Amino acid sequence: MRREDEPEYREYVAARMESLRRTAFLLCHDWHAADDLVSTVLLKLYRSWSRARGADNVDAYVRGMLTNAWLDERRRPWRREWPQAEPPEAQAPPVEPGDRSGIGRLLRSLGPRQRAVVVLRYYCDLSVEQTAHLLGISEGTVKSQSARGLETLRGLAVDAHAEGRL
Amino acid sequence: MNDYRECLDEYVGTAPRTTMDIDDLVKRGRRAQRGRRIAAASGGLALTVAAALSAVSVLGPPVRPPRPPAAASAAVSAHAAPETPDERAQRLLAAVKAAIAREAPGVAGLATLRRQMHVCSPGATPPARLAPYDAATFDAACPDDSPLHRLRLENFDWIGQLTIGGVTSAVRIHVGAMPQDDPAGEPELVPGLVGKVPGGGTGLSRTPGVTVLANESAVQVVKPDGTLFFVGHPERHALPWTDLWQSVGVDPAVHL
Image (cartoon, rainbow over all chains, first blue to last red; front, side, top):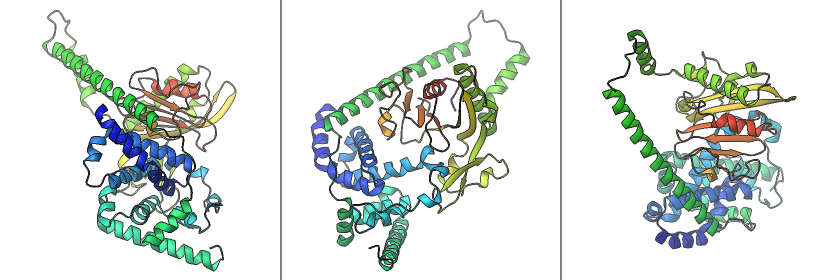
């Protein structure tokens, strides 16, 4: 990045940091991890600012970076092969104090790609086309993943209602 | 759709105060940019030197003693034959063992290091687990279209139990290719390991172009050629001997 472009970058980061942190939280479910992720992405953005600012929709571009960075991080060796660290009985996450609707628990039950699609489509309000482009997958995959994601959320919500948890 | 957004927004709630600072981000961005430029310049210089040396070797100094024909052809064939994944696994394990033995002369248990492979269980959590290497099932252990299948020939893992200085611990060692979109030289791209080098270092090794990161449970070294060296406890317990692993990771012989 050229020094003369930095004020624009600073302005963008100041305006969008909170929104990015919230999106990252929906992916990570942990504020520390969310901040790490946002920090990572903002550094990547520093490097690619000239390309990002030329995008049709800078916000969508940056959210794509955020989601892809999160998906990449989950693919890393130390995230993918620790089976003993997560025994089956520990997989049902506890209900968090702030998770009154249980949406966090429901969201976490989705697979990473499904969760990314749901967050981009229904939290960031991106279109199927934008989501497909950002994640590098087909529009059909976005449609099926978001449909399955919503179906899972609805199904879990119904179960939770039946059990009196919601 | 708005209902979903409101619902999600309510779940997120009020964000806690962040420690992220824009000035700090810009500083880190500048530093990483400077590092990339230096690395690129060094790489260019290295290529120039390599090209010059190649030219010299091709033209050949007039007083160079002739190499015996058999030795020359053996050397050529050794360079011409590409290394198979099994040969690479053996070479890497030997390099890692040699580096450990050098750094910890009294080490016991090196022979327990067994090669592992990923076995996928699509849809399960986690979607893959490490299992002892089995040549017969290696190619079919993960679906053809999965990243782990594609990475299988350039990622190598071993698990074993070592004893050093009276302390015994299981270790999991990984040598593989760094993901393409996460280049070396940017330690901040690895959440959780940033700024946690034992001794309070900055996360950058003294070796140019090599990034060393560590915390209480893992050590990671990324080299300019894209080699990722990683050591952790197989069950994510505390990892002993982190200084040792950093030295092993930066050993020039440990490379893809």
